[in-house]
Image (cartoon, rainbow, N blue to C red):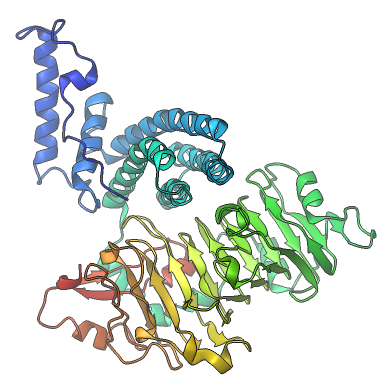
Length: 566
């Protein structure tokens, strides 16, 4: 994400102030000059201004804050909530104009692949707009919710650009999205500057002793807990059956008939069978539960892939964008094969989603944990290249992760996390999982390097923790340095894991360019040798702050980075 080269303060001409109408010495000119000087004083006085301290692009952030101070009554760095509100209001206005422009580009596009990528952008802009509006609603949004939704909005914009090939269309879309991305980044910086937890608060929660790690997220209602834990009978609202014994023959028909914006749990029971369909659970289908007869009995299968013309985003066999969705006792697969490259089985773009006792099978890009808060428990996930990827706040607990045999010349990587801003509260955690080779890989494992993960984006963040078994041949200390050429802020690690990889304590995983530094911490307590590795340099403590719920607080693993690696 390239920084926007925006001046610290806009000139009068950029604000449509014509010199012929504003004369030196007039009250209007003096008032304008006074406002600019006042804003400049606020922004250039480090004792007063701290809102952009953690921004990855301080100059752009300062310019956006200055604009908020100039144009919004009551907005002042000493009143950060009003500054944030002003930035979000500006973002909403600009977003609507940008969305209309992108929709126009899609309507005019003739190349099939370009048109497909722009169709994704139109959909992503709609998702981003909803999250922005939610964050701007200060009457209902908590700081943690707002941080989550703004992180998702930025992810939507990045996803749109990632789907476009270099060339004029991408440049045109980028011209619309890059100002929005700067606004989103500044919003996150302001929000985090006033709402971040202290290091002492983190230290008080020893991740290795956090009992809540085995619990469901606090936002799961008691009635849903009974369903997930098997202590309550599942009362289906509708039944789907291939043999005609249910109300619907396809899962999509049942989803389409479900109420929009549901206020209660609506259960679709899918009887055993193989359902060949690409299923979409769009954003209006909230509080939906799709439950099958077991991960080996109820199968939803597809084979869309990039080689045959799909985009990564729309290749999913099952795509979920509705908040509060629960998937249980299902198998979701993409059978395209390793030669077809990107082919998603399950994409989750929903907030507070729970995937329980499901099997997700594919090859490259199997599980797309796209954005927002997601919890996976007792699942099986298989694949080859980057097969758990995305930029969600995703927790996989008690899961079996199976690496399959890739295509010739490919290298397996379990995770590829896509965090693009240091203030996004996103990351991937695999807790008490097992990483094992599939039957087709085990005999030839030495011929196909396997990595626990790689830094896909500049601030990628992944952790394996507590009794994760890695019964596979891992290379490079378990981590690949191959990722974005600017992945200097990425963090990967493991703690209290078992198995042959990562390899030796303190091993660095950086195999990429000199600017791609990734530290793979040892399979031991984060308070041990990893802190001693920084001896002789000023250390910085990295917090993994993925939320305020107990299930996420338990994942606040502290990484100690030497200043030379920052």
